[in-house]
Image (cartoon, rainbow, N blue to C red; front, top):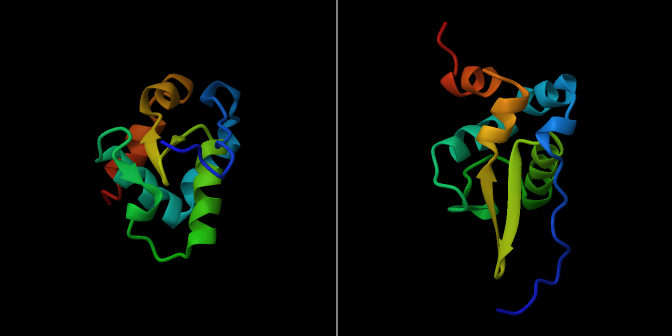
Length: 108
């Protein structure tokens, strides 16, 4: 496999994330949809372009950067694709119960 022409994504470990950053990342409807889709997918099975969200490529890249910065998502390059996984266990250790609340959705 040829090396990627882009730099590897930078990740923030959930231990280093303030609660305000985590909440802000999860407050956006597009990012929330991404997290929910990842929660329903096997690790590393979803490329960035496989999500059905109403934003362009640049905005999608921004949303993934916010999720990485909040410790919610880890990404790696596999050939020309960047694949994702939800950092469920790590995030749960940092913010017990928060991800479960987010993933259960609106139950009102």
